[in-house]
Image 1 (cartoon, rainbow, N blue to C red):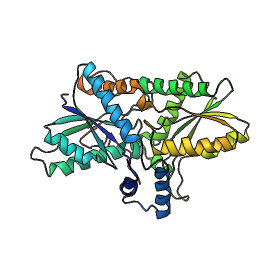
Image 2 (cartoon, rainbow, N blue to C red):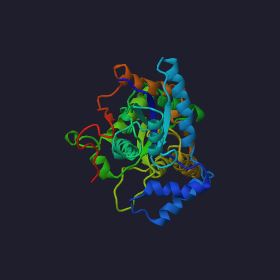
Image 3 (cartoon, rainbow, N blue to C red):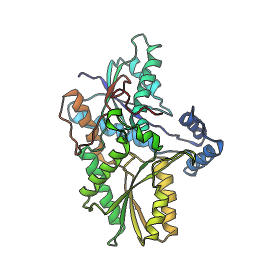
Image 4 (cartoon, helix red, strand yellow):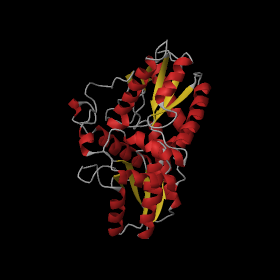
Length: 347
């Protein structure tokens, strides 16, 4: 496939105090989120000066990807667009059309399947193309989303090295490794993946990458846990559990005095990593007298840009995909069409 450019598509985040409320309005549009919850989340952002690091980290990743593409003989521009904050993806696709881009690949900064992790990015692509198509004489470029990469060998290796580094910070004492990913409503996980697959693709992928990372880091099958974080729905709605804070208290009750937390559900640091883990989880561990170390996310590792370029080569050069799991890896699609009919449709 001939392509003119790559689009990095992400969630977005505020870059100053005045941007926090408008950003949260975009995130929660169409959802009945109580004002008190928005106030609480706004305070989390303001605790860090109203700045999420996610945009900065994505810009740094783009620079690394452009260098890796050029070094591999595939030089092309890499554009940046977000779902919820500037640069918004519709504006970016309009710029791409004005620049003469007719066909581009899309790398979404999520390794997993599920509605929020995958299908919603297809919807973002479709909405952006529709918005641009009405205004651009040439129409919107073709946009082909790259596949999920939860079990790519580089993603596993990067996270395993980060776990080893976190354990080293704790010294020789025995420590429990706890993998975390963003919780979602149980009902959403039940429909993650094509209907014929039986659902739960998101949680199965998270558990599988935890197994792969743990094995690569030299942990036994009983040497780690998988937990969830950052739930935001009403208490009456079941979400994936256990929650990271509840789990830490349980480990303390069981006599564990050191924990290494690995946020494998996240490609880069942003508010939910900084607040939920570096602030809340670390503070809770301190109150329990537990040593705490948090593993780095994968996106800042130099090898992550190589991973992205490998995904590009799968399309441009028909390179064989690399994966370490029998659990399906999907998520590719053209112009906003999902990877399979009925895939990850929320109820």
